[in-house]
Length: 514
Ligand code: BG6
Image (cartoon, rainbow, N blue to C red):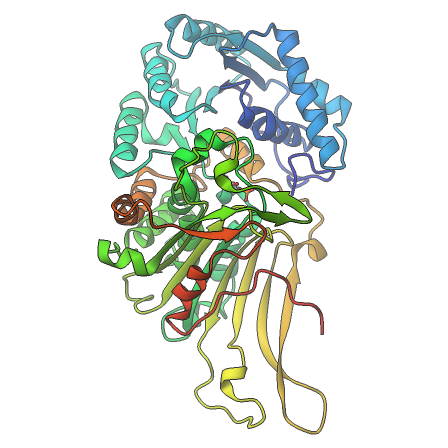
């Protein structure tokens, strides 16, 4: 998965999104260069943007329009090269011809007047405007206020006005609520698109297709048949150049209430009444709200935080987290989290949900493993039940997207002995499309006004409400953090956490074929 895949990421028959102007606040920032622009390029290449589509980047950095385009071009070339692919010159110039730049302060009304002029200049061809907040969170509120004050959130009969807000959406429940209140004072809920790029990933959406498009899973999708669910997002990347943001944020806030809970919601939600955006988002909010709030005294047992220490990843040395740029030398920020959660509802009562996510781990893998209960009685004397692994459905979100079902099969020979085998479906074997970063789908959906894959305010607040007791408990015992070697599978404490229930984590390393 790369920002510049060589192959199409959108379906061949994607209709171009209605013509509009996308105003990107934070035009010089990392997110714009590395993800938003490459995604727009991919959409342009796949014919998903209208010829009247325009981009207006806004930032404080001094650039004239040509200079800004040159700056984008250079980054794009570098990214494509690193991914072993190339930027198609024709597509890139198509996009650049439509890209302008407004140099200005986010807190000055004149900036919004300049933006307004650009939007008007693009009308009547354009049908609307999307304001993309690719900025540090402290600017979310002020930009929304200014947009409203400049009359830029007012929609016409046909003209839409939408805001795309990046994460982190708040730092805790109170700040998320305050931000929601502020955005809702500037715009209506239907105009606010809170982005979580995990939801744009094909395999994440495929969880719903798998559960609700097949008859065989739903009858066994409950506490009677499922023993536990494990959700893993292991990353090999370190904190890289993001020390300032990351050290103040930590793995819990960065990954859990958003990405990890979205995966949990897909797996655990009730079937929605329809495929309508709000029907789906209502079910997701309900299941996130059902995550049991951890008591402070339980946090030490059911929540593990850890920080990476020096090690090596793919043969490259990695230094201690605290030695990274812009990280405090006495930092106790977690770069790894493991949790044991419970979902308090009829379907999931008693089924533990284990979550683990970390940076600088030995393997990059995001997957959901659903482990079923063991057969009630073993007939196979040569294979004691405790040596037989129970059935498991593993949904691989990335890389090597696909689904596999772990089964027991007879080892050839006279004796009846069993071994584990996998029935495996790989996306790449069936579908020609490249998996995208998630941004293409979401930007396209926002341009066409489909909010299904965006977070509603109640989803976000439910996520914060579930992690807040843990964050509070941690704040009260600041020194208690575990360590793990960079390049390893995480801290031993995470194995203890799951081991207490008699389970173990699904291995991060892929099995060698037998
Ligand atoms: C981002 C986090 O939201 O998601 C990053 O801020 C993390 O820390 C990233 O690396 C993971 O996304 P992906 O698509 O690379 O799995």
